[in-house]
Amino acid sequence: MKLVSKTFYLDNDVVNIAKTLLGKVLISSIGAHPISCRIVETEAYRGPDDRACHAYNYRQTERTKVIYEEGGVAYIYISYGMHFMLNVVTSTKGNAHAILIRAVEPLEGIESMVVNRKIQADNYLLTGGPGKVCQALGITKEINGLAFYKKDSPLQIYDDGHFIENKNIITTSRVGMSIHTAEASNWPWRFYIKGNKYVSRPLKVFYPW
DNA sequence: AAGAGGATGAACT
DNA sequence: GTTCATCCTCTTG
Image (tube, rainbow, N blue to C red):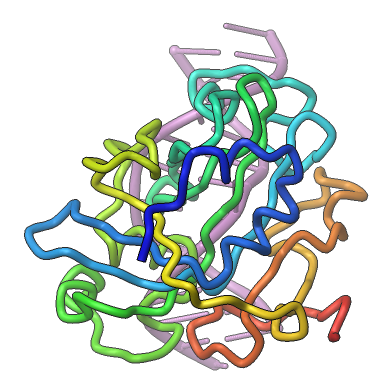
């Protein structure tokens, strides 16, 4: 099990990194007890040409500025006023790319996740959904901007050698697109592990190979 | 200063 | 399938 290095995040192909993140291990030491889980669902967002990205057309606000940072840091924002969303920032400084972690599969610290979520379940109800992931791992805006690749970080990403073959990756359009996202609504930038019971929700599959 | 809308989740029918 | 809780962030004036 090795900590994923900073260079992994600096690549300019955010869509490919979103696929590569599937199977990686996310470890949280935010709470009293450590929690580890496997990433099973991701979505790519790419400024400036992706209308669904918060950094579309180089948009600069207080919220979006961390997306422009050098890859390997966390971008946390609040959705619907109550749910935290965890993103992995990628590419070099100035390129606003990010990957939303939509679902994870619990590995260790399951009891802590059950307590954090206030629900007993061993399926998507526990960690299948971006808001659920943050609640289960104790992620809040305090994590915003912190690096995943540092030895002392409260949120880290590891590679334990578990490789997801291309044939086991399902590709779909992204979840929650609105009318304003126009043609980007249909971009096939959501990825999940085929058959995994922690995946958030079914959606029309574009490339079922 | 105010209003609209949102990369959701839970509880419904 | 539907509704709605709940409030942050952004835009507009």
